[in-house]
Length: 211
Image (cartoon, rainbow, N blue to C red; front, side):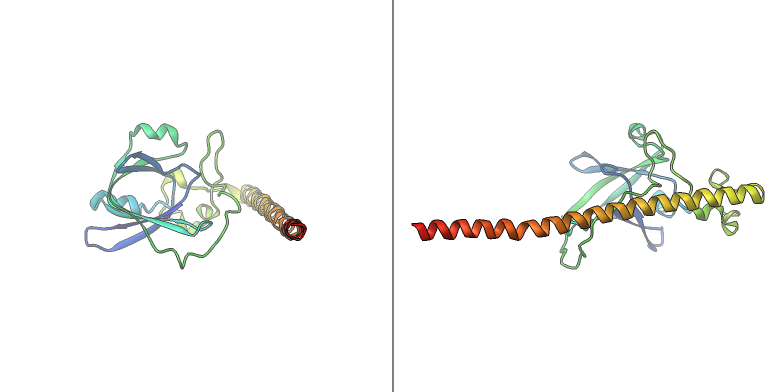
């Protein structure tokens, strides 16, 4: 994951979160990286800005290791990029020619851990579910036709909501299970470490005393 900063022709900035599975940002060469553009909210703020103003800023944050990296450069959009075959569900490829790459002070980065990858990220061999907000009436007039999720009739709407409810339950259950396993591992490791440390100290003290 990273944050992408762009600006329009008047210099008005915009910032967007970009997420994917591990490896979705590729280092093409020593000065170029590439990443896919997946289906979003249909506003195309980032891509629209890049089309008229190519200068971008990328901020990568590793919350587990509490590190971050900044990349500034110029971006280009590619609808027929060879890398499209590597990213199921990608609409196009964004390539960034880096002008600056540098680390940043990370003392204020909070330590967090990954619980689960988003179920909405496209994967090879599976179709991600549609987000709930696309079925809301207030967005129907602004979404492209391909993005419209319009259940036909009360029965279809109930089935749609039931599927979405069941899907959310499964995701929460999976996250809860992962969280429980991690907590149990931490508890187990926490109970083991003092015993090992005490055993090592006892052996060391015994050997010193014996010497």
